Image 1: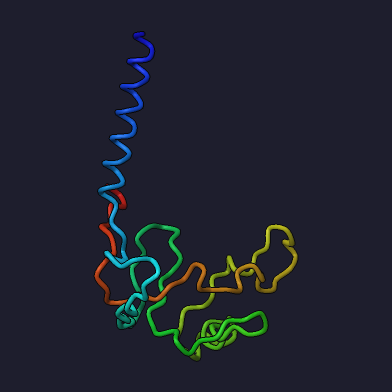
Image 2 (image 1 turned 45 degrees about the horizontal axis):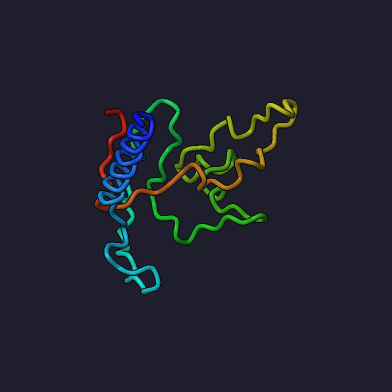
Length: 140
C-alpha cells in the first residue's frame, strides 16, 4: 500500500512540475496560432564598424563589420575572396583570411584554401542593431 502511495505522489509531483514548466514557456511567435500567418519580422539595420569588433573570447571567429547583402557564396564562387584573399587584402585594406584556413591537417603539404572552410557565414556573421530575443546568460 505504501509503494502505491509513494508512486502516486511521485507521479503527481512530476506531472505537476512538468505542467508548471510548460506554463512558463513563451513562444517567440506570441499568441498566434501555428496555422496563422505571422507578420514579417522587423529587418534590423546591419552595423558597420571600421576596424572590426573586439572578440568576446580568444578563439572567436571575427565578426563581419560590414553589409553582406550583395556578397555571394556558392559551390563555385566566394565573393569574400575579392577583398580578403592573400593577393588582394592589402590593396583593399581588409584583413586577410586566416592562415588556419589554408592548413589542412589531413593534407599538410597542400597550401590551397581548405574547401570545408569555403562557406564563411557558418562561422563569421554580421552584427545588427536589434533587441535580443531572449536574455543573454552567457558567462553567468
